[in-house]
Image (tube, rainbow, N blue to C red; front, top):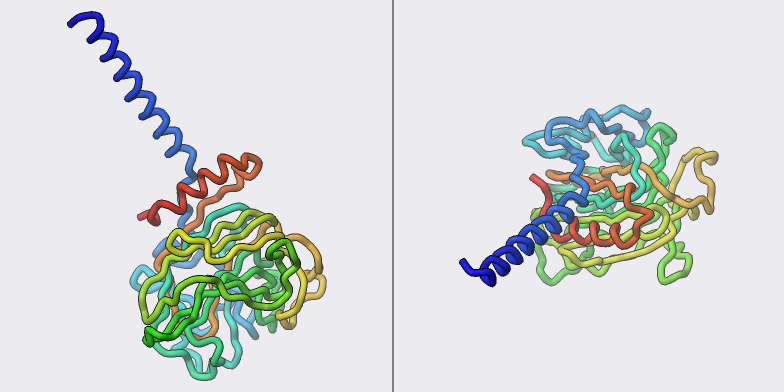
Length: 289
């Protein structure tokens, strides 16, 4: 082996090692997914169903069967506006939340028309312990989940925005209407849908479907109406929502969740370039096993 061959061989080895090191650095930077739903039980969650005290899972509304977190109403005589919410017991501020969900079956008796194939993930919510017995919704930012019917011509977007007791900014202006549709396509029937939500404290929140941001807004804060029978001491209008609890919703239509996972980004909130890179890595990968 001559000197030229030795030099080229050494350079190639260094190049390979460098690429491997860089790849390892990228992988090690990305936080591991936290499985909020462990596939076995809801011990780390707290139910709050309207007309019942916090912690009472009336009618076994939220249950785990077949490795899925299911929302069911077979023990209800009638829905009667008994809106339910299941809160994960740890609040978060900066994160990516990934859900895999599907609507199935028929709406329970007594559910409102607007609640057909309607559920949601509540972000930056008040604690379940601070909700009053007859309160309908937690003060929160709602990522509204809607299902389409089996008519391929109909349109019904999902990953919309609703604001029970809150306001946001859109296009640098205060946005006060209760709900606004995203620009998503319609997901018909009982198909599984993967929805992702990028939540960055009180700065920006993005709803993502199939790698595309379907709605984006900023400066989430307490304000407005659309929440009933709450404790006035909790509703401090104008207060920025920097963190809060994540809820899954029951609004009268059966829904399954087979994945509820979260990537905690709080460690990177003061490193904007690194934060953005890690978010892109997370959004371009499939959910963890």
